[in-house]
Length: 426
Image (cartoon, rainbow, N blue to C red; front, side, top):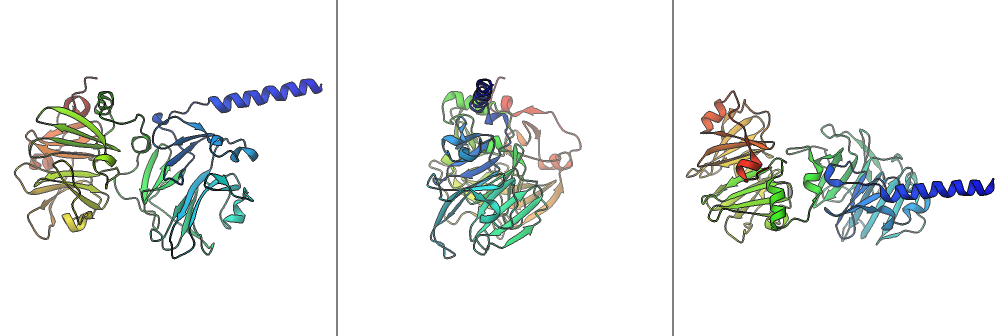
């Protein structure tokens, strides 16, 4: 009987080990991540089940290969929440650089890849007043929060934990969905919910901009992106909607989608691809709108306007970014913008309305508001010799003028972005 019991336990252990090592996760299929945090080098770690993705591309590996102690007490089936607490030269307190992991009712604290002595501990011991079995957590330093704060999420309950005084304040973020993981990256805050995400204000929970968005389009680079023809082909044939698009006076096209940037040179009819981070390093990603005027690219992201020279190298002008309200006379964020050739009027799409901004005026004011009755939402828009093109999803629609656009009650002929704009044949 003892031998039989021993063999049974051995078989169960082998079966668990095999399942543990052969679970297949494909981030490009749109996964709901369990937890997200950056490491000490600022590289995002995405946790799914007992696996871990390091950075924006690459295959998953077992979490315990990097954080072995997580498996000493728990066969890691998942990580509930995680965040990096990083604070250097802060007047509030001494320098810190830790990574915290939350599993069920325990918290693990790592410093430089090693588990701190005495950990894991009960969550209630380290973070009194914070419940077990969390959904998400994120660190919010000063001045992004008024005091050094950890924001915890559990269902629709949100807790602001004052790291200095250990006081807990419950918050109501009414415009936010329930976060299944959260991330602070490049001084921005992201709430992941399912396979979507929204960017939020850590103090108020307000969500600004066109959200939610697909996480895989922004945080999951499914191939190493370059100007290699195979990668250009993949991007130009993508059915993911464009975030912004414009043409300059020479007819060259600039299109933006997630982290990616496509440039079509009208002179030699070539299409090249790059990352926004490489071509426009101050932007990082997620352009809301773009238009060309007077040799410059006006690039709108949230409530800020970034200004670049069109010519190579694309220099970011001194004094920018500036608030959208200051630069264009309208509160950001906006949905789309375009300027027609030989004109100085920027047409701004915000919600279900179109506004005009005279770029030669000072100060600039958004005026002449008209409804856009034919569209429920607009992803991007541009103006060129063919007229105005409005982009919704993976299609676009053509209008001869703004008067026809605002007066339309029925959609015109539908055109496919990948085929008719980028020449993809499938």
